[in-house]
Length: 88
Image (cartoon, rainbow, N blue to C red; front, side, top):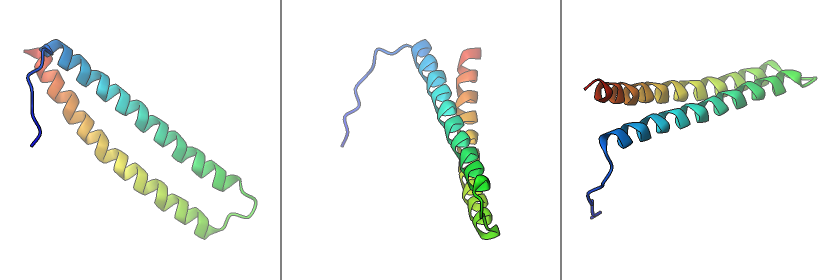
């Protein structure tokens, strides 16, 4: 079993760490979305892109965006949790 030890972290430090964590996750998701856009541009730029290829890329991008949307909901919950602590 893991051993959980007490920490000297203050509430203010924990809130700051959570906000920083949310910001870093947002930056990471931004990079992923940018890469998906570049993927689409690369396929469109090809000379002989087929409809099948476009549909495959579209499905791949859609799956990535769906996953990111779920992560955004989690991040929103984290931010609301932090906001409630700040108001207290």
